[in-house]
Image (cartoon, rainbow, N blue to C red; front, side, top):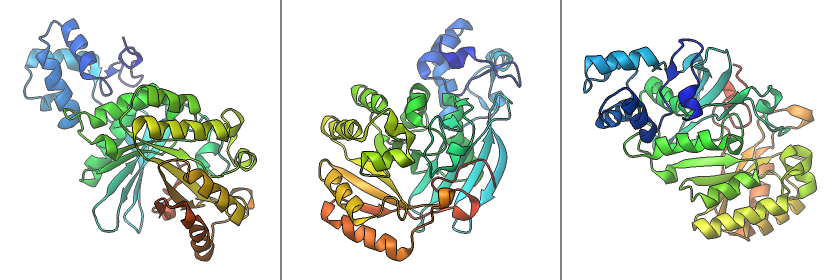
Length: 354
């Protein structure tokens, strides 16, 4: 049985039921002496209808409700903090359903025109890596999130804001590839038309460069978008700001990226945090252009949002010049700017503080 099935909530003594697949629910229902079709009703109630009490499951009888109430918890994540930005971004600090006090964050990011509505979700409490520009890296790593805690971030954010997301990005706290199975389980539930029902192209998994995770992603033919947090086009320069370079070198990472685009026939995204004096020189731009020309990709540039090590945010003029130097790459380049910066909700700022 899956670890989620076996792990009990310390708060209630019951097993959290969110995060189960339809197959697992069918097995659980069989164990309760019920007919298999009941599993589909529970599955739809959990993810499509977003029920938060057993009384809301009107298609199942009282006896089954009592059995489920006795054994399984529907408790949603507890919202510890909820902050709203002047630009419409909202940040949510959640507490783990285990009642352990572990906190992690999600961000609701609406576009200015009201079209694209993105939820940035976390996969770990803290992070297993130490990217020097990232506030999450300053926190102690406290463990992986279960699939139920990952998907419930989406369910709770949508409930509170009163709207549905058009896109989900695994770009919050943590390295998703270091929690691969829970992340992919959650992504599958987000994608399944009988669950949340979001298109696979609207779900993006981001990695700092865990090559074996990317290889597994390709081998499993995962249908979701893939983004790589690149941040420097040179191995030595990248090693100075991202410790992942010590385990997975830039050349092998780029080889994996090329293989992804060829095997999956999909464009890959490179995320690039712009740090003046660190990775924005003409030579850096030239090397980044060379990388981009190797494969079908796009580049998202992001102005630095933190102030560690005396680093500073680039000026608009510096950003414009860097973008001009990248034009020869001939690939789409997007300046993601910094929505939610005033509430510490922008890229690199998630550290469970207000």
